[in-house]
Image 1 (cartoon, rainbow, N blue to C red):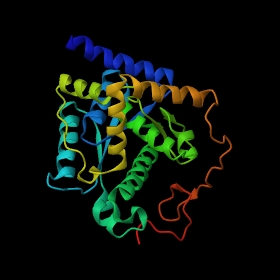
Image 2 (tube, one colour; image 1 turned 60 degrees about the horizontal axis):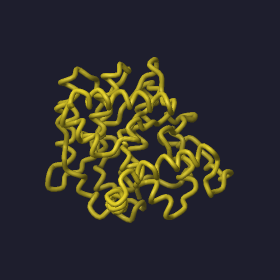
Image 3 (tube, helix red, strand yellow; image 1 turned 180 degrees about the horizontal axis):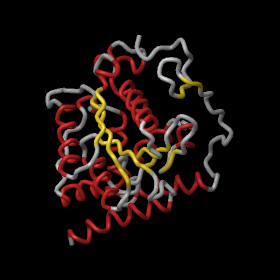
Length: 280
């Protein structure tokens, strides 16, 4: 049974990659790894499928009571070393002069809550490394539970622009890497089972700042629905993709896209006015 399961997960991943036209065998792939089960499992799966794939770990300087960032990096490096894989490590504190918690305390973003600054820094660095090192695509380990929770939140607020951009593939643009989510149709429990069956050591703890977050609340709410109606998360997500594909979303199709221009400090595309700084 375990052998068949370990064969089924990569087979299904390959099917999703082909179905959503994520990337080809000739393209260079960069996987964002956090030391968690999903990202390490994704890296493992893509390697098993024969893709050219390296990893990227971002050190965020988040400790809490478990030395979270240190342990996450240790496990990411352990996986890379054991499998003879290349892992790029970026220390946010060295790049920005401060850790994520310190940056968030002094930033106008998120009112001092680290999540907003963390997301901004991670997107910036992932795109920068992918661009500077010549990768064709950036892959993340978002699973079905992650995607359904984001979709639920965006639907509650009818965030049209976010809804239009959500999906297994976010096309690249000038200065922006193509982003893909090969695990978007796997339940979180399925990826947990895969990691355990493959003997992948990963960090079990959530980020210390995740407690009380909206995403956790949305996941818990959807878990209640899933318990009462098994398959509800998958139906919710796939129905959204079909509606989006068929142009049947109840949102404006001609939403204006933000004007992007090169940041005068780092050169990456941004919609932020030149006079607005990352942290004040």
